[in-house]
Image (tube, rainbow, N blue to C red; front, side):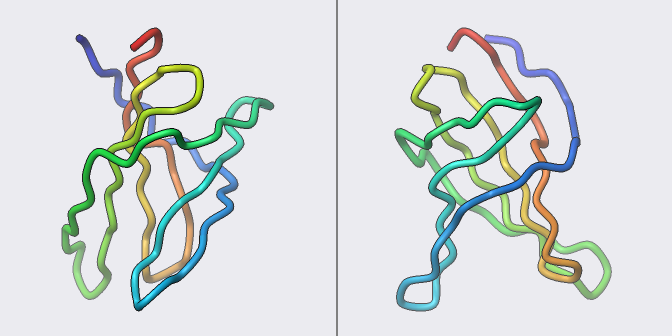
Length: 84
């Protein structure tokens, strides 16, 4: 499995529950992807901001790493492996 670095902005529908942020679906390249499975979540630090990384499998069986920046509230597709 080979991942490709993308780092493109995306629109995400997510929710907060018990102090945790969870993405539900996102729009990338004009297509909406529903998140079928959350594989992992980790945090990295960039200066004073936190970047939340989410490893997910979409409803199309593609693997993505989504990135949420807590300083500017922007989402990105960080990495992708299409075709699972």
